[in-house]
Image (cartoon, rainbow, N blue to C red):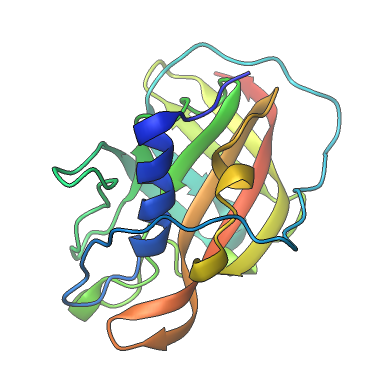
Length: 204
């Protein structure tokens, strides 16, 4: 089984509090959210599919909501928080490089903005509209496509972010897409939108 550990887990959980708000003056924080007591696990889906070889994601497509974006690599910032994609006109999603690559066993994590400041809507602006069973395609650097099926879509309070469910142990290839959502207050949003998905197929 694969999971984020130690500093990488803490940084990822912190990033979920900060990522994808896209307004001016977005800053990092110092606290990590804890799982909600009422959070429920994502639904199981279909027959397990074998994990694919490790390869960095370079493209993400979500046909149901019109997403077709390059994927950049995100590491850790100097303060230990996860980097987020830059606020830019040509918004992109970003894969957290301390999570498994898509199609490997474990929770692969991709972050994106819901808004990008003066540039308007972000690449994940419609993430909360996804439904169970809809397709997410990650194209990998080695030419393989790892295809996932949505198992759950949740909007959760940032104060009760379910870190263990998002970043914890899983025994199959899974995907997490994360952005901001809910009510906007000042420069940020009160909630996160989290999409859970499981590998459904892989190939050229």
